[in-house]
Length: 285
Image 1: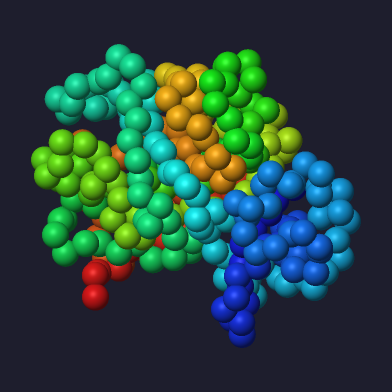
Image 2: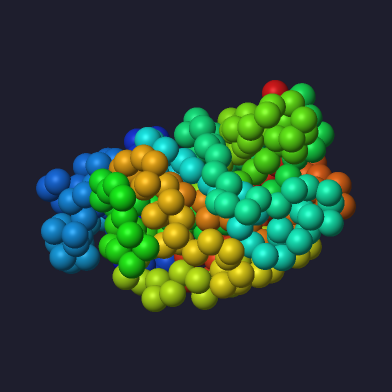
């Protein structure tokens, strides 16, 4: 099942919907669904049947505006250099490759929808892209063993871990500032529930800029698998429904060639079975 947050052009009120066959079914009339994906996730297993059977108003996808599937997670966590080829790319550029899992926060205020603009900040010209498979947590969890990790995943989505490289490396001793500029967390286009993804480590991911392919890799190149990522994080903290985990980017980022994003560029990120997000880069007002 694919679940979206959307609003119509006539009504800016966000609501939840079920996506199938190029249309979105408005779930506003289903008791208990509400308007928050984060609030729905703990109830989703017991409400699934009624949501799948709902026959509310339907809209063609081009006629609505898709919002970020999760707009208010408590945490947006991301792992650095988690693909073998990307780690070698970084090593060749003189960047130390970590031995252990390298985690950082993207502040949740960076999150925008799957077709929202990415704003290039005035303070930097080093704006970069990173396609990543996003994992959305579905249940409150702590100390999760790797074999049990799939049971706490609600679903998956496409993310672009937009990065401001000089603020990432030079301006701050941690990654947080360079990863958290407003609009630098586009995600979507919807939440694909975990049962529709038989193997999250067997997905093809592609990113293009103005139609030119920059990244084309598969998720089987991860150094630390998703189960190990969840086990590591829950050793330290409680993960909550709606928390988002970005699981790493493959080779092909702009930093090694200094091929930075510019206003007017259109960045499209697509993962097989999960859909695509497409965002235009604009100059700061």
